[in-house]
Image 1 (tube, rainbow over the protein chains, first blue to last red):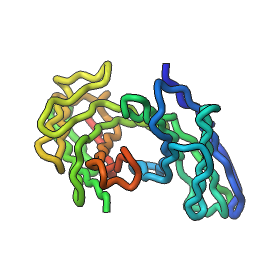
Image 2 (cartoon, rainbow over the protein chains, first blue to last red):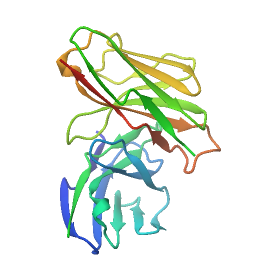
Image 3 (cartoon, chains in turn brown, purple):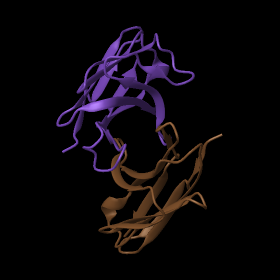
Image 4 (tube, rainbow over the protein chains, first blue to last red):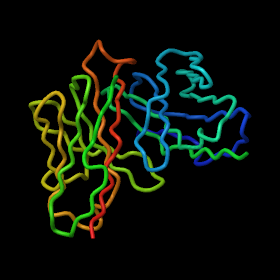
Amino acid sequence: GQNIDQPTEMTATEGAIVQINCTYQTSGFNGLFWYQQHAGEAPTFLSYNVLDGLEEKGRFSSFLSRSKGYSYLLLKELQMKDSASYLCAVMDSNYQLIWGAGTKLIIKP
Amino acid sequence: GAVVSQHPSRVICKSGTSVKIECRSLDFQATTMFWYRQFPKKSLMLMATSNEGSKATYEQGVEKDKFLINHASLTLSTLTVTSAHPEDSSFYICSARMIEGVARAPETQYFGPGTRLLVL
C-alpha cells in the first residue's frame, strides 16, 4: 500500500530552526510537495522536489532523497505566524497526490 | 496568479436539504479539479477528480449519487451534497491543476479557501 509518515506534532521556539521529516512508500514517484495549512484554512503550496537535494526558498528549505524515500522541510528564524500544520504529499505514478496526515507545528515565544 | 475561489465559505443547512459548492479558478484554466474533505485534525481525503467535459472519477467509498460533481468549464466545478445529513458536516476543499506549461511547478495543485458545511 501507499504510505506517508510524518510526526503528528512538534514544538519549537521563536527564532529557532525546526526540521519536519517525511518518509514515504508509494507506487511510483512524480515529486514531493510540502504545503502549509493554518487552522480552518486551505493548504498553501510551499515547495516541490522531484530531484535529490536541497531546494532553498527564503526561510524555508526542502530536501529530498528518493533512494531513502525521505524528505524534510526546514524552517529557519521561526516566527509565531509559522504555527500551522505542514502537509507532506507525494505524487504517485498516476499523478495522484498521496497525503500525509500533517505535522502540527507549535511555536512558543 | 493561481487563485482559486470557493463559494460559499460557510453554510449551515437543515438535514435533508441539498447544498451546492462552487470552485472557480480565477486567473488560469484548470484541466483537472479535485474535491477533498477534511475532518478536524486529519489530513485531506480525496473524494473525486473531475476533468472538464467528462464524468468525475470518485474514490472508493464515496457515493457518487450523494456527492454530485459537475465540471462545466475549464474554470468552474461544482459539488452538490444531496440530502445532506449531520455526518456530512465537514470542511470541503477544492483544488485546481493548471494546464501544462503554465504551472509554477509541474502538476501543482492550487487550493480554494474551503467551505465549512454544518448540517443540523
